[in-house]
Image (cartoon, rainbow, N blue to C red; front, side, top):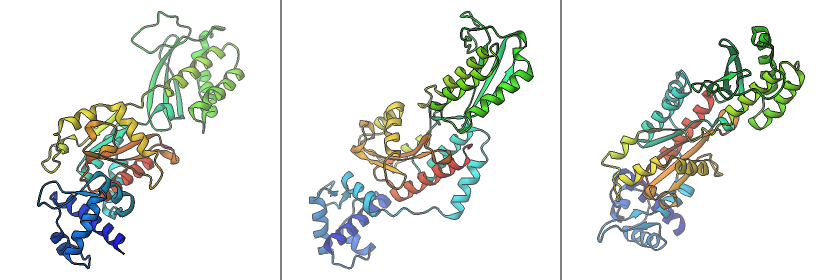
Length: 362
């Protein structure tokens, strides 16, 4: 019974401290929470919790505050994630579904998380390296130049120019890809009919396949076309694979950074270390990726000194993966002080990640 009561005392301390931002004393716990025991018993429980490292006394004669270890126990065993209300869920779905393109979707998702949590939101762009091909479009743009439009299954749109038969002196203002060695395509290679057939074959071969499977699928297409078209088909196939394999996963959206300046955030080491840590995007994304892959409720939490970045030693990071058809293609997270509303933050991150997955192209 004493173990359960001490956990109840810890939960009450965490909840009160998050709400009031003031150290919590035994008398306050007795008055605010129906713990069913005397202040003396609560003081004994607080002493045991302090000895175990779950709470600490910041000043003499002050109440107690949770430590990183206390927050960890709270998150792992005590926190009850509050589901969002029906109006909140409808508002999230409506707001995201009204986006006009991928940039708008991710910008809206970041603003939503920042608004719901009152903290900083971090949204990673879907990585083309993890994507498949949703649709390929081929558009002749004059002469022997071809515009190749690559639409990934995460909704990213990339445009590349292919100079059919061009050499190293191709115009530097465009992304030009030399066609591989082999027979030169005839002047009619870029007519609408030929391109339409080639486009249909490549799209059919890519259907349902991830990046790692595309080279083999496209090789079969190249082998099946006329020899005069093989260099063009191979050039297009290589360009698509190279585009989807581009290292673009380091692009992120930050929203709500101004929230860190609010008085209630109150970082002991000041705001500068936190802002500098947010600029370390590669390391930050590595942390978010680790969190999103942790087993459990689909949301990872890293508290205080558990974070690898020194600037985040006074913060907690909550993150979840998102992606269409159940695949994680990127990460969404929230960063705030260790004195955060963990149940609310976890619920908000999880809900926005789910709706973001739903509105991604499938």
